[in-house]
Image (cartoon, rainbow, N blue to C red; front, top):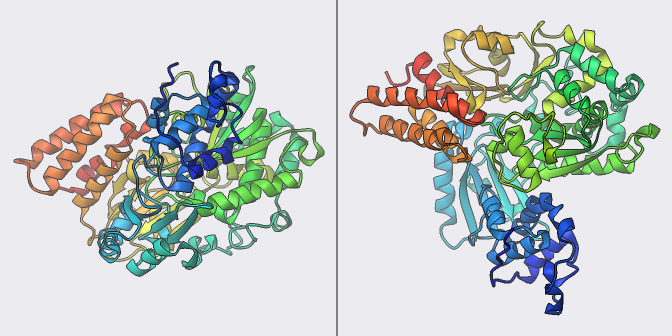
Length: 607
């Protein structure tokens, strides 16, 4: 491997940021200010290369302290890890939250995605830019979904420094967003997680029953409300017994793919290659999705316990929680919960005196939707660009660091707790025979009470929208987010199950339900979806890299009436959509055409 370092030097702050992650360098080869004599040979190269997975935390450290990543800082980080600077540059430029060009220390991310766009985000952006003007020391960046859809429009201010400071403004006004950017410490305290749960306090809730009822920072409060009952039963059952319970419950993955969780766990547990890993995918970046954020902010110890149960079942002793970079409060809550659990013997070398060792490491994403795909997430953790891998081999055989890996999202893992406390038969009795258990739905847009709702599988779309208070003049409902599909107002009897939505020609996805009334211009909404997929495509495969661009171009021509014939562009969209669906490597390209196709065929968007 060629290591070509430039002549740029890190500043003292940049050096301190990197050293805070790795400790002080031990030789000039790693960047220490010593005699050049020890540059004649490399020492500790193998150990440094084995730490390649710390590249992303190192980039975060620089970006958090300085606000951007200079050539000197990148070179110094690469020396510490013996990573070629060209490769590290490719990683740094892959993520939207990093910048390799100078920018102000304060960045204000203003969401312009679907829910926020419908709530007036374009006017909000214009007002903020007008108020701040030039030379304000604030960079205003239009952002994809920030996961705050129940409080649209939303903005997130990030001020670099030691420590980095953040402030959320949602629902955002020009004045509130400017205050968050100019004085993050003075911004009003963010709404409690329970504010996103309109059903909070309902005794029938299973997954959300503790949100709003317990102090999310208190381990004792969590245990007083049934916490760690599931883990004790898991130890009583043994790993095979836990997997049998999860299999018998019929639990399907809640991230959108709906793969049987028990089968995934069994396949990993049976692999002879070790070590095994557990990865929790908390990088929910689908526009309109925010349920995992609410769970992590309102009931963080539940996720710690659920990850411990899953790891015990599959024989993993190390777990990674990959958490969205746009979720500062969830990061704080989860890190505190992990630290407290470790201090109380609920993580570490001897959990609950059972002789079982397991620990959790939190890794922050940095703004890449594609990292929600499991193999792209593995690459991100390992210190590479977050590009999906070809399958097979599947993650249960060769996943993180080339070892057998179980990957589940937050909602899937949290469902394991009631399976063990209620028992598989009682859990399977909830919902329908093919879609068992409770399901969380993220409802936003044209409703009176947006938020996270918990309903048993089998409730209809109309029942959910009635619960949320759907407004008059409903024009369309988007199921499954940008990767999902639209349904008409006369189709609200669709059962909210994996099989029910499939039979209706749409998808349940991760549980996104976005309502739009007739004041929302549908062509502009579709154009925003196309822009989202064009921005978020990793560019690895041609069908997605080119197809998402061609889709956006055609929708631009139709929306702006610059094309000679809309029918010709629609025919082109169908051809491009089929190519992306059939030939893309991962789900991003395979689903990028879904919402546009459904809007054309079900809603007559361009008639």
